[in-house]
Amino acid sequence: MPLEAFSPSATLVGTLTGGVTSIDRTLINQSGRAQTLAARSVQKLFASRIDAALIDLGRSNSTAISEQLLRDQSHLISRKERVNQAVGVLNQALDQFDYLKNHIEYLEEQIAAHEAGDITGAELSADWDNKLRKINQLASAASESIKDGSSYYQKNLIETRSRSSFSTQTLFAPYNSAGDTLQIDGVYLGTDYYITEDTSGDFWNSDTGYAESEDAVGTLTEYTSYPDTPTGLSDSVTDLTLNFYTVSTGAISFELPGTGTITGTVTEGGLGLLDAWIYSDFDNQTSIDQAKSDLEAAEGLILTTEAEFLHDRATLQSRVSVFDSLITGINSEVANLVEDIQDEARADLLATQLEFILAQFDFALLAARGNSLVQSILISQDEEDFGTNTNAGRVLISVGQTVNITA
Image (tube, rainbow, N blue to C red):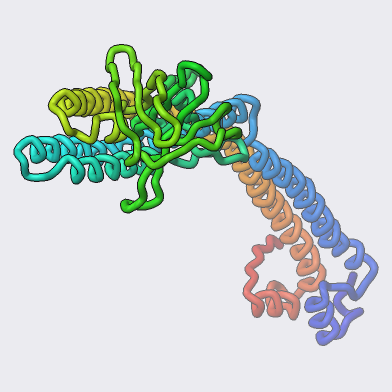
């Protein structure tokens, strides 16, 4: 179209407005809108692909293998917690052993003092019965709370809950990851006894070892069925008179004021230490020797049980180390597995993003070439006989664009 059809100012306005001053220029400039729509289409296409890759990356933390490993890990952690609980129960029991040994040693020293004439038999008897109470308190103090499922239970390996059988609790602790357990049998380290009467089979029970205070005096009580049906016969242990006690058979005979002679059989429990009255309140050497022998046996039981519990604790502590290693190994295995999965998903994501960037770059180059062609056409229409110094050329140069035109 001839330049004379436009004024210089019109040509300037047309250039600034994209050259939309004639029908042919309008058709040419539609290419810019097409480029924009095409660019948006490319962006949407790659955006959906990148979103899908991001979703895959988010899901890559969960696989059948990793979930199974995590379940195994949870199982091991649970077993490790049970081992730690078992160690806690053993520790609570072991904490009492030094005190138990001290009480035994104290009574041995008191017997020696009595034999040396430093204390009387009555003084030793009161001290002896009081120590039985303290020993039972130590046995009771070994109780530890453990959790099984959603419930808590008291576990005590050196106390009994039955004064007629002296039975103890058993502790089962996980031993390995295969489900094996270590059985730890309780050992009653308190002290108790009962007498079964020969003629009636009635049950005689003493509460000396369970007195409420140091000043309390124990009572011997008869039951037809322990502990629900007392017969009504009872008396303070300080009022009882021992006729004889045979250690090898447990046979015993004693006098109960107002009732007469009672014969029966003694059944010992725990450390096997009896009330002072069964040692005739230490008024003869035979009874004193018997008490010394019982103390020696009690000390031996304490030392043997302590050694067994220490061995069991060391075994369980070694199991904790094994479980720690297994748990750590699974942690590492899961981490490596997830990392491998993430690397694959991350690589896919990065490849998609890079592909998008390259597509944008290629499209930009294509668009730039198209724009240069359009602008070249516009300028060629304006230049006619005026060379490159037309109004359109000057405006393009003024906004920082450089266009090479071949006449």
